[in-house]
Amino acid sequence: MPSKPKVVLGVSGGIAAYKACELLRRLTESGHDVRVVPTDSALHFVGAATWSALSGNPVSTEVWDSVHEVPHVRIGQHADIVVVAPATADMLAKAAHGLADDLLTNTLLTARCPVVFAPAMHTEMWEHPATQENVATLRRRGALVIEPAVGRLTGVDTGKGRFPDPVEIFDYVRRVLAGGGETDLVGKHVVVSAGGTREPLDPVRFLGNRSSGKQGYALARTAAARGARVTLLSANAALPDPAGVDVVHVGTAMQLREAVLKAAADADAVVMAAAVADFRPETYAAGKIKKKDGQEPAPIALVRNPDILAEISGDRPRPGQVVVGFAAETDDVLANGRAKLARKGCDLLVVNEVGERKTFGSEENEAVILGADGSETPVPYGPKDVLADRIWDEVLRLG
Ligand code: CTP
Image (cartoon, rainbow, N blue to C red; front, side, top):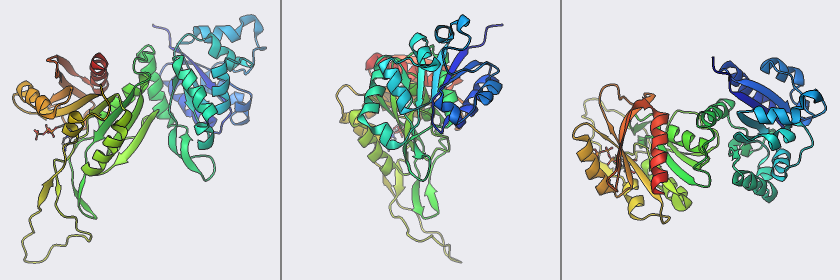
């Protein structure tokens, strides 16, 4: 039996330490051997007994326990991945400066495996230039620093700095482990649109489509795990925000267009995976449209929405930016795909054949990635993550 992947879970002293218990549970239950290394201050929030019981391993904070085993060197050397969650501003500062005054900071210096930090702190602390410079230093050295989520913080305030959902951090960690810590998208900003737009008719009705958003979310998750800064423009997808991804929620095609143009200004790649409504109702009824006895329904007049993909392809907000589109075809898939690629002016077009098995909302997909340079990359039926990774491979080839 292959040995279990060895995970070091470093916990520093923030209130989100309690959420790291859930992360630990998921890691152990899915067959990882987890050694928890808390800092002294982390133990103010969650005690050593909890970490030990949940991990099934001994827990200590400092280098003077079990000295004969040389833990300050051994734990880091043997790890397949180190995850510091939550990472406080203080922990990021120590790691950036190579301080080593406890077991966790020693472990960070001896680890040669992928290292992930999941920061959690108040917005002011996160945005402080000292913290931002420390994060930049860690990233430059190859560490993966997950962007904090935006939302409710300790107390009544809200903002950026929230610890991402532990389930999403777990997903991120698994992807990094599966990819062997490949960080080929570090330093890149990628924008992904996902889901389907809704075009309102009145306060309760809309014209929409059945796109689940799963392929777009898979693109966002895989890019984040490969080290990219990711902006996900989510149109009505009922999916949790992925860890380490800046998520902007939009409703209509016009809102999506505005969000794409804004996010794309400094992006290295834009991937339009969202199903954008080609038309919207010409008028929006401020009050609910009522049926009237004996009267036929009034026809709904539609107007064209702007084609965001064509617009951004024709007028790139940043030189050298790679633009990717999606298309669903039923017949003459490759010929129609090629024609659409040329029409839209994008660099890559991911063409799905619509048919049985390939339903909306499924976890799997099959596609051909067509390149404007004539390339043709078939991706066989399989998980949407695999297709997502192949798309990023192609983006990197061009970018
Ligand atoms: N797209 C867009 N803006 C629109 C419509 C589509 O940016 N108003 C993008 C989608 O995000 C996707 C691609 O264009 O990347 C799909 O192109 P589209 O012309 O809508 O193709 P199909 O959906 O396959 O429709 P059709 O067969 O009618 O061309």
